[in-house]
Length: 222
Image (cartoon, rainbow, N blue to C red):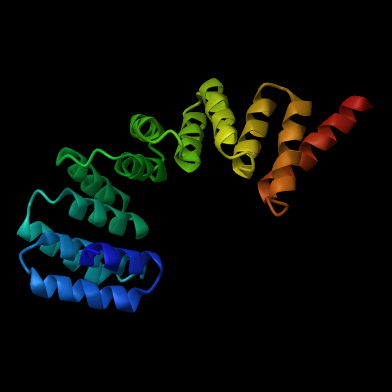
């Protein structure tokens, strides 16, 4: 097996020390190859060593200014530290350099979402779902952003598609319940809140919403 693949497998198995030793070997053997630095940077990111991770990603960019995955790594590093404008710049640079994968568009969209620039997030999250239509979490975040942008009809359709991918997605049920409230469909809303609580009994938002809807329904019955 290729050493990089072996080290990545070790990292995915959370054998971080073994992976680090192997990445060090790779860098020693090929000090001009940015891939080893990028992979080691990703490992450091996994263990929340942001300072060293940044150094490794920046070293990779020194070796190859067109190393798109190094910019993607930097974007993730900034995102994890809630430095969203810097993350945004790095993800955009990765895309500009040709890294046109769902994860990059998703993360770029999320940098806008975290800054409450919902309408700016929409095209990137939409593109992510187009590139990976089977990822329920990407689709959910797209639906959430549609809802935050007051596109409730479109959001409802997206949340329904989330449930086709993951019928136990409690947050999709909760948000469908909220949209049902906007449509003044108390019974439909209650059904979604109940389902969310069956899936996730500690879902506080669904519990609160359920109690409010039941109170409204009881008052209506009177």
